[in-house]
Image (cartoon, rainbow, N blue to C red):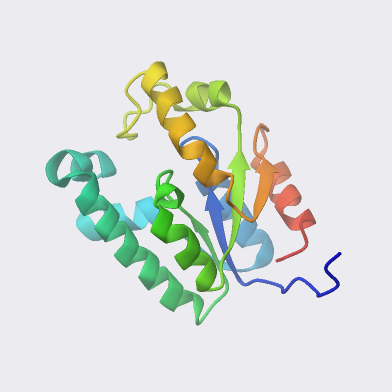
Length: 176
């Protein structure tokens, strides 16, 4: 048994598939802690003046991932000045170079786990999801990303109707 205390972290990354509630939970968690909040996809859209769908369609995923990494680096600089909760994009943690990089820079990761059927239900009809085409491709992408999400430091059940319950589960982990 490890007898060393787990360090309290002031940089939290929420990981999970589209529709898992990263933004909703992240805003509530940041408010509860009195920390700053940042949403990776929202910041990318703000900086580029286009939606994620448009960026994927016009420049492709490789370009998007490059911008995503630049924004992450900016968030890490911001976290040097203030405690921060960051909602990552659904594919951010599936980029192998990001996982170790986030940890090496002091972040703790929480996977908001949710059954794929519930994620499909939540995302159906949303037009701002560039990688949601149909339930079959959705499931396939989920299965591809699942092993990456499972590498998060903590897994929290996000199959709840109230994001505040997910926040409580995160706080029970005792590392923030």
